Structures are given as C-alpha cells and as structure tokens.
Image 1 (cartoon, rainbow, N blue to C red):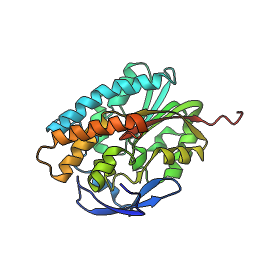
Image 2: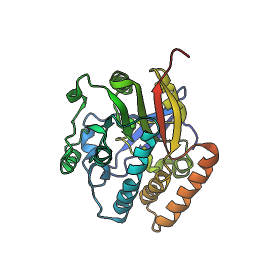
Image 3: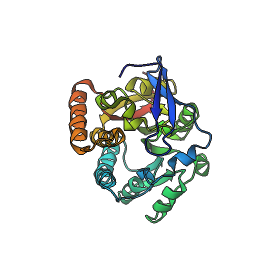
Image 4: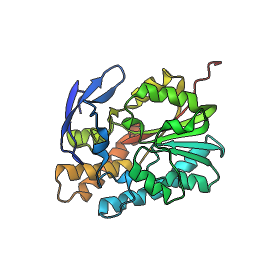
Length: 280
C-alpha cells in the first residue's frame, strides 16, 4: 500500500460508515477523521468480542483460544523486565490478563470504559475502574496497554498520564497493529486492523519511537504478535466477502510472518519501554 495522504476506509464490523485516514509523514502515522462525538455507540456490537467472552462462532472460538494461550506469554514477557509488583492494565477488557497476573502474585488494577466488559470482569472477582480518576496519584511497576493506544482520543494527554503514573524504574508495555505489515498492504482498505472509527490512530514502529521519545521514554525491546496476522487476515477475508476465507487467511497470515521475519514488520508489535536515562 502506498502512503497516500488520505485513505477512505469503511467500518465493516458495526456501522458500515466510511472514515478518512489522514497521513502524517513526519511520524509515519495515520489518524482517523472525523472522530465521532458519540464514539461509544461504535463499540456496542456483539462483533466487538474483546468486550465479551463470546464463543458463538468459529472466529470467536479461535479468538478466545489464541487469547488464552497469549495471556501466559504476555505475563512471561513482563517477567523478563520486572519482578512481581504492582501492575496496571489500561483497557483491561473482561479482565482475563489481570486475573492470571493476580494469580501469579501481582497487585493488579485495571481501567476499562466499557460497562459490559467490567460486568464480565466482576464475575472473575475483579473490580475495574471506569476511568483513570479512581487511581489518584498511585504509581505502578508495570503499565500495560494491549491493543489500546490506538483507541485513545488524546495521545499527548495519555502519554503525560503514563509518565506521571509509571514508577521511575517501571516498565511500559504497548501493543498496537502495524500498518507497514504485509497483511496491511495485501488487504488494503479491507485490512481489519484499520477498525475505524474505534481505532483513532494507526502506528508504525517509527511513530511509536518518535512519539514516546518526545515524552521521556525509549523503546528497549520490540516483539512480534505472531498470531495477529492470522486473525486479522481471517477478519479481512470476511470483510472482502470471501467464501473460503480460512485458506487464504492462513496463507496471507503465514506470508506476512515470513516476510516480517526478515523486515521486522509484523502485523502487530509489542514495544517495551523504559524512561530515558538522562545520565547516559
């Protein structure tokens, strides 16, 4: 996909409305325009499975299966950078990640705007905050945002908050889709990870590095989310109206990972960040 100054993308999963993506060449980043004032209504769908524990269809069952496997992988990743302590998950969904972290001895807090998702989390003995106001001046050893930063309306405000609430020796984990991946280029306007208008920002590795370095953070490690290329390809095939969507989705997901093994441009990437050491 060429880096056009503007791309028109359809909301395939909920409203069927179209939105523009505006390109910022300096940051190598797209932004959704316009941002709906009543953005909440675009999340009110059974199709938005990260706010439910749905296992109704094949796609939902696959999503939940992969999610269960990845929860342990995510916790193992965090343990490479931080010993057990306080952990905040922003955009905690139905609380599965926090539940497994709590079981491993972490002191957990979560933020989740969706009342539906918070209700599901409550059945797992987790009380999630609706927003950041309930946390006061508390700081955390680890803050995670798993596929959440792309949903945040005000990026600068969010980064200011993260800088204030992450311990000085803390670890920040950000996971976002990567529009420079092969699957993004292959599916173009049907690429499911555009997910407008819920995704307000669309990142590359350059944009993450640039944005956070300006706010006192440095990326110390970068990891792929291997399964995302398959899941995103499956949804993208669905949006294209493919009849045999599992076969081409698997082929494109595999091809995306193989190409990314050389280029580093995986469908989704995890960025591990620390505060910039000004004494260097």
